Length: 85
Picture (cartoon, rainbow, N blue to C red):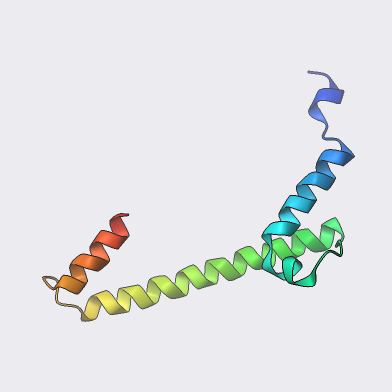
């Protein structure tokens, strides 16, 4: 495989950065301005950490809710069906 084929072009990097920028809520709020790639990657890491904390929190809350439910109740069945989805 030639080095030319294995390298990504600057244009492709710029396109990927633009796509990533469009996915992050913080950069969408900021508008059209373009952040540096390093700043964008840092914001991406921060956003992923934030999502991970949110998932953990929701999981803890769901576990606490399930513990208080009657296992044979309609609510428990709804929760189980949602978790299977």
